[in-house]
Length: 203
Image 1 (cartoon, rainbow, N blue to C red):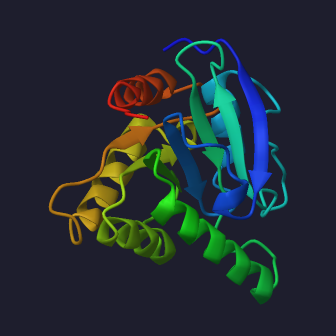
Image 2: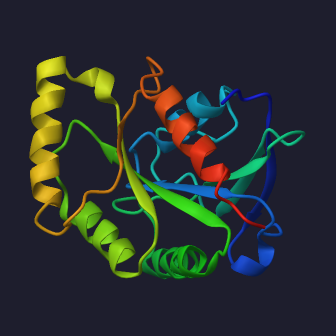
């Protein structure tokens, strides 16, 4: 897939504020500081599209971007991170509520890309989040970020360990992608996956 353009569309805190669901849509979510914004910007080849910050919790709404708006368009959605962002309990509850509602009810959502920092062992919060998505029957894929920070051998061992951990809950593992915003690793594979899924979309 060739990315010709990527444009900001809207930010919302409920389904009513989201764009009309007439295009295939892909959501990106992960723990705070997983490198989500950097990955999105690399994927669509547009620096600054998704706002990056050294402070976790920068994304605070359901942010829609339209990719290739003039031909074979699709929506990319940047969701608030979960985990250790320094937010109040009330704000955390609000985020969890509208994220859950969006994921369960957005009819044109083709895949939820769950981002995982490749440098860390499997975390309980990530495993539980993915387990809940699986229980709800929602389509997901796992995107390992910052893979350039590990040697080839370290990455192989880390990914094998993660796959073993996932197999405790999954009979069949979700699709796995290995990426780096720095080296652009995994970009073509992710875009090809999205391109293939777009062909299955029915408005």
